[in-house]
Length: 197
View (cartoon, rainbow, N blue to C red):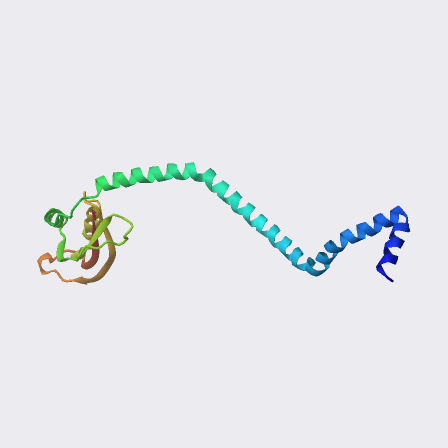
């Protein structure tokens, strides 16, 4: 068939057939795209829908965080106030003379013998916090009740102190305390002294 014959048939056909052929010709590019790229387009559409859902979830999470922000700001302000009060309580330096005087007073008052007092170097346990610790190794010799009273009074001293690693050893003979019923224990502990920076 030649082109002229096709044109004549088209002109002689009914208007419904003409419109049908024109519509079919108009749909051919879309049909071609659908057949050749349909799967890729469907996969891309599914991916975009997933991305929309993810972004919507992120938006909702951010919206919730924004709603929690005033409460967090109030909590931060409260923590900063507590930190300011703690800095006022925390001493600027460790005055070893005062600590030794307090320990000597407690030693005499409670009848406890301090057999060893060995301070170590100051260190900062947490770089994010503005304080330092100074550990002091203690060895005490006294009956159990006096030892416990001594440690209790030690942690309630005006300078901030903390006692760790308490270990009770074997009883030892104390020649100066003959006739005493309570055995003398040798107790080791680590006293922690705090100071601000």
